[in-house]
Picture 1 (cartoon, rainbow, N blue to C red):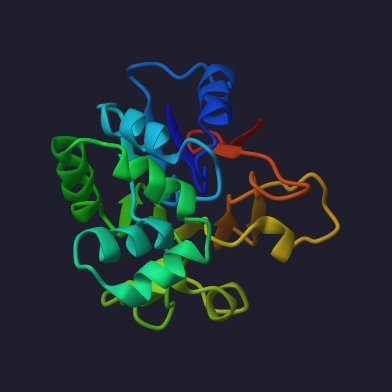
Picture 2 (picture 1 turned 90 degrees about the vertical axis):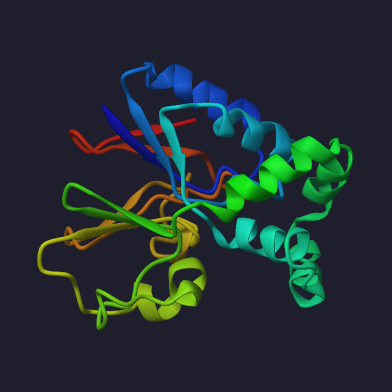
Length: 213
């Protein structure tokens, strides 16, 4: 079975509970659409767990991007942005690691894909530019929001599955938040686990079954 989840944001216990709920097996595959760190309490623990799993594929999210640009490139602008978006606890936990653990995390994040195509699905953290399928910018894949969500364009043969934007943004009257599907062209799976009215959502690609914790 193939599963997609996003924006776990350091909620290690909820993620482990989700693995129980879906009865995740060694032969299954989990695609995580970024933002496993920040805001929650156990970001580094969650990240290190995912790093060790042969059947879990993490895509880069904008929160990993902020962390990476500071930890690898010492970009002070990104550091300020990271700290202002829930990165304090992640950075504190990172600073408690030994040198080998730190290097391992940086190298792992530095080699994360920005998107994947699985069957007919394009998996990405934030979204895409529908006008330029073959040449997507890093900024779009990691940061886009309104332009992507409000776009009436679609890819003819692909469905875009994304996180980044909590689904209350698209369906504010649905509580707790649920996975958002629009005309088979876009599917939002960030159910706002770290926000009021949020939960962790997971989508099984084989039959589009939805799971929540």
